[in-house]
Image (cartoon, rainbow, N blue to C red; front, side):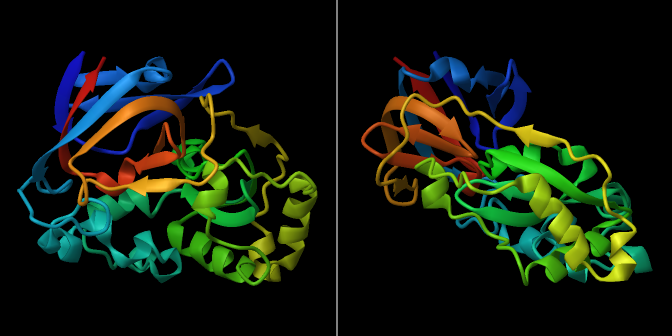
Length: 267
């Protein structure tokens, strides 16, 4: 089997209790779970196309943008990384139509477990995709809020008590905390919020459990980059987050290489 196209983050869903991944390359939608245990080759074609405008770019900014789109595209606006700075609720955005669909919609503030416990936010439409992309083993919603700005303000308030980053090495090694009661932490988090934000607390204590298609986890993850080597070949041992786990402890972050033109072949 062969397919060629520009990389974008893998699509994911939960099927029969396990995360199922699909990679779109050109017109092909590849079931990546089916490739685990097989020998695969990803060959970078020395071309990057901007994920926003499609133009060729010699360098990728912020996971797939050309420099101009990095500066102007709504997908790369400041509030993507710093939601507390979102001003769409005030009528200010690079593109208000985009903001109506991505910022001025319900957002969740959540706690997730992987190597540790972390706080984060996501659009309502991105559950459970956001947690899968981060390689979380479980997650629970703290609050449901009406827009991105409020979610960001709430996240900032909770950063004083919880980490907001995932330790990617520990996540890929499957080092999980086992002594945390995530539901109890959720209720603690609500109590830690300023009173004016507690009104958004989510009553449902559902805990999402996420299981990944992995035959073997790396002991000492070694990151691969198409900027250093154009060809990645070997046995696919599993997938977690947006990482392909290859043999010999090698890992490839698909999302980091968004826009890179590659050819995939399966032996």
